[in-house]
Length: 547
Image 1 (tube, rainbow, N blue to C red):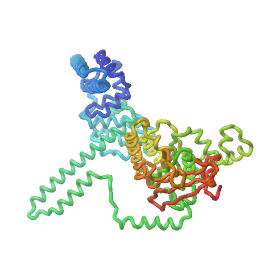
Image 2 (image 1 turned 30 degrees about the vertical axis):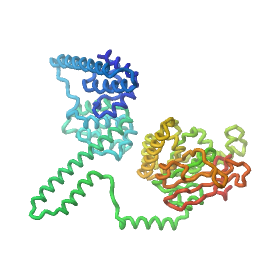
Image 3 (image 1 turned 135 degrees about the horizontal axis):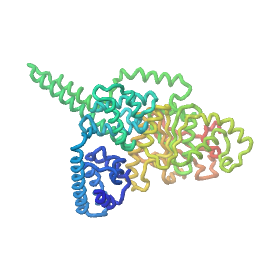
Image 4 (image 1 turned 120 degrees about the vertical axis):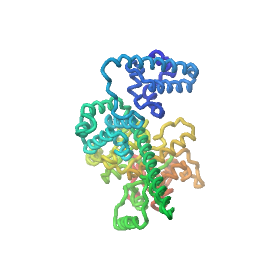
């Protein structure tokens, strides 16, 4: 059987275990026990697969081989038939041997349907990784578990996690206490089995999403049965009240189908709105996240939580420098936690630019190693503020939107992050070699997810975007316009800022050293132009009054 399986594996191009496991995750018919570890053991001859495991694994290899044109479908199907026959023979032989010996205890005290398997796969991910726990928070709860033992494990696990304790099978068993239905030794056996069969922790999101959808479907089904019972009861009345029945249907079914959405009447929201207006009138500082520029904060009272801000500019305008400006205003000047996702510079280059801007030490003095005593003194004076700033830097070259969302959820809970700066969004989503329409779809998906993240976590997301070649306008300068950015960014953004410097094109312009922030779109304030000073040698922008 192993030789035949290896022939099928080789014909499929010998894909990696991670590639196979990820492909099988998308196959609802594949058993949950066919995870990363099980696939490796099966291919290495250390584990005999069940007929269902073998069918799913060989079927995936069949589709992979045929789609890549490596072999004909007929030959692959003959291989699968041989594999299944061998597998059945081996299992029948094993059952005959075991029949005369001690009884093998069942793997579970409950039926091994797909729902229970998914629950155990998720619990395994959560035990192995705290990131998987944070990924599932707000997605599922104890009521989403169909198996009582799995529910108890989940409650004990979450109790440990929320109290900052280590999550391990031993700690979970101790926290679960006495089990009325399952003896402690059996519980320990089940729990260690969950850990042993666990897939890669990143798969936790897939299993939690499945569980959430199934739970919602069960609730809708229960609501439907309840409504059907009410309808029968009302139909037997002498004068059936159809209006009452309609209201009950709306409340019960819509409440089950959309439990996460709620409405608010105007009278309930007006008091909070008046409080915001009063606070804006009495405060002399921005109520939102300060931008670091007086005139910009005056327009919108700072960046507001839940906003998606898009900053676009052509090459050589200083977009990365402006990204660090926003970061400094939030975390160094205001001591508020922030996240910088930089796909342009490494963490060391970022820190040098932050130090140059804060200490007013020329960046080229740092990079060329010619700092004098004055430079060192200035840097030493600002180092405590820089090193103590709550800034989280991510400089991974292949960072994805999904990874960013998971990281921000965790940091929002642990550290209270209120600002996320992305430099830049066109490098964040994968597949720059795609066709233009595919890139557009990926950018649209990334934008929607970032906007949803800003609303969900109540933080500000500032996404920078690299404009292509900007044509010269009637004024003789290639000034950016709102239509130069993709429509998906324009429509999703609460604020769009277009960055422009004339001296990037003409060195002897009378506006050398000036930079324009065109507020091309703003849902919270008026449009306009903010004129600032660009101090490239210090890697920063400043208000004109400071220049």
